[in-house]
Length: 173
Image (tube, rainbow, N blue to C red; front, side, top):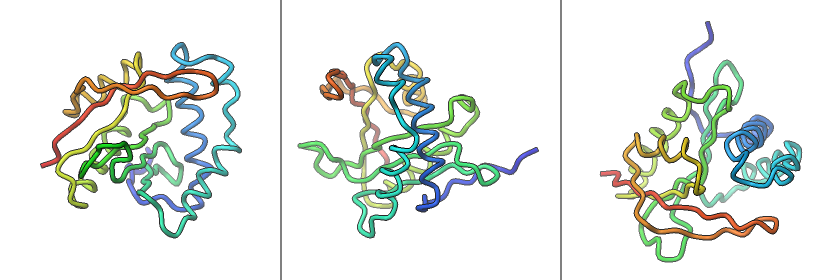
């Protein structure tokens, strides 16, 4: 039996594991919601380079944590101050991904609990996140954790594709 899941601050050497989780989770979770060619073109190597650069930044805008099981990255999350215009004093969960073969095993719950605690400790009374319209698995996951849709939507342009995202908020107090 493997070790317990450890949630810890990401390090530069975690970049490859973060990239693998990122690409495989996008290709699984967004299949049917995004164009197949867009998902098929995702590159672990390219994502690893971005992750490495982000983790090496001596003055990062936010924080990245990983879910580590037996030395393997099985999930990760990034968060910090709200980045959207009008976010005010809200925190934001920027990204949260778990390895697709570990969906519904507690990895996501451990990560979001750690994010909520960290944002609260950083002084944020509330936080928000964005969910891709149609991503019912994610919407249900966040709803179970008390994140409620507030009616705000935004359009995100990526590779000639317009993504509709729905905002969810939660009081952290």
